[in-house]
Image 1 (cartoon, rainbow, N blue to C red):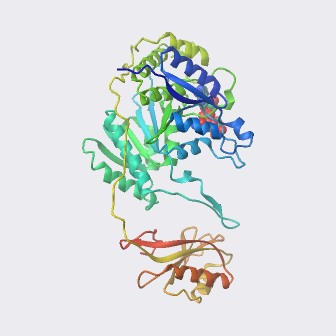
Image 2: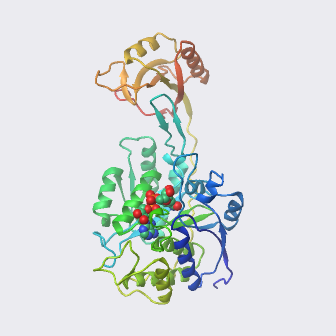
Length: 482
Ligand code: NAD
């Protein structure tokens, strides 16, 4: 039996075009009989400017943690200053690890070179270069931390396979750059192979992100579901949306085990804000995903079909309007009214959507694994230093390192000691690798070595312990070394 109770949903009108597209979206939801009770919160630019660096107040968090469902219009992230992206904060604070972005072509009504494009991008949402852990270490060098964890990879990859199965998709493709980042991206790819083996009914393949993105832009129809790391996912989902026809069309779900956030993939479009011309379809498509999520598939279906009918009737906002394809150019509000007027109608050209059999929410869980035995084997000591590689190497070699030996020095990853090319460009950022030739060492050895280097006048800017796990190195090799 369908519940008639209204589901509380936290709603933010956002910035720029946000209020316009949210008003249109909510009016469609209401006209379609969505059983939701919106709780309006303030989030975004105004809140940032009032001195809340996260762009969201405590009372808004309280609403979010209670309703566990967030319909969010785009938010402007002020550039520069100490502002943290509210989107990133919300995703991590609420554990929204899976970002699901379906992209579809709506040819012949919306211009695209790829009429058969139908690809869902599943992007890891919490890790990778988005942890925002960055440092300035020397006059010349800045660093960001790319953090990838086994549980993080496992749950997004399992999510992608379960999503494919639940939504009748045939293939899952992994994008990574594991030819270069063998440890972080390598882990992602390895877990893709491990988990993929449990889904024999689903076809699998892997592309290096660069050629994969090129193929996605050129031959998107060869992809079905793509799972990838956070930053790559961010970039390729905009590519896919644009190639499909417009960034104004795509909706996105950010899903966690307890909460979920639904939005448009595009931003706050300040260039067209206040003009009443923005396309509300991206947010509406996000809201349709939300209705499916809260168990109101019949309403989601009614809205989705009315929206498809509006698109094929040629009622288009400026971003997709083409004289030869469209019938009428409309503004945001008028577009919303056109969808409302079609509620109850099915599209004739497009296949009507059915949410009659909505799959159960995806629950990913974790794999139990035996802990590997971790042993300290050496240390990479980073120095801020100016001079030649040979001078640094020769003077470091003369400083005792206890159970360890200086095995190599690199500058921006290129080996410069022992043996270097005069052509190699040198900066003030040096990595000195010390390894034990005999066996595991105590942590005190690392501290003693740091102390010796500091008392010899070196500026130690960072250390990175070198561990072996069950005997396998937990650090990348230096070129020319084992
Ligand atoms: P944008 O997506 O806002 O705009 C890019 C281009 O697409 C603009 O020309 C814009 O007019 C057009 N466009 C976007 N949405 C449209 C729509 N619905 N209808 C018609 N045209 C549309 O990207 P941007 O300009 O790089 O970013 C603007 C702001 O949005 C920035 O502050 C950024 O941080 C923020 N942003 C927020 C989110 C989010 O809240 N999830 C996502 C991306 C960017």
